[in-house]
Image 1 (cartoon, helix red, strand yellow):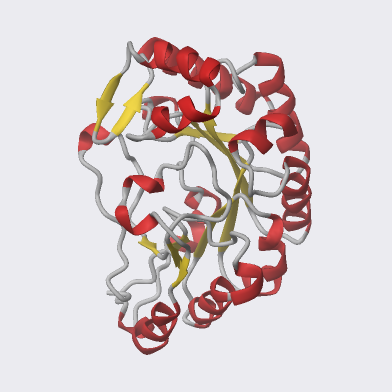
Image 2: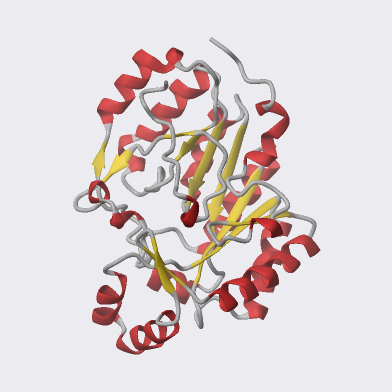
Length: 297
């Protein structure tokens, strides 16, 4: 195995449909983007001060060739690999150098335009970059994602990556009732993503973890009461509070129609609606042909 990095299999109730892959989180602690809805704080390792995992880099250098099959490597499934501290440590770039040299396909998931810095490395292997763009409304993103680059920077990054020949996807995640679920706003967002070279879109509704509503109550009392009321009809599934099924189904189907209308592939994440997907939610569909011929070492 590659430094014991395979992703954990979610129970069926968690509705995860991701194919097997390795996951690397270069950083532990609370991500510098400070997203109000952060899911990773559910896990103790992703709370507190951000901690670069320099020891992981050394392990990768020693053990990368132990992987029998070159499964894709995702950076990252819990914390952003291009959060602000990356500008100083360059840890994600150093990890990428090792993985690219080892011939591993790469799946980047981020909210940062900093990923463009590593175009030279991504161009040397099969790679997909997925940027999360929850809204084009900077008032919304500055409230929900205070430490992340604004939407215009992410859109420009998608354009640059696509123009350079890197397959790009986007996540509209999370979709929050009454905040970024307006049909006209979603249409504008999907249209902008398509014109930026995005080939695949994955969507997901907000699934708060325990503590979210307590934090929200301190920050915005009106929003707290509105969302608490909506989610009161939902249910907890493995530590996540799900919206009522009727809302989830309606918003996913609406976005599916928009995304397919602009010629992109579509998937939802953990919504129990895989029947509506036209491709794989994690973006591996964009490099499928390469993955069919795995390299054995």
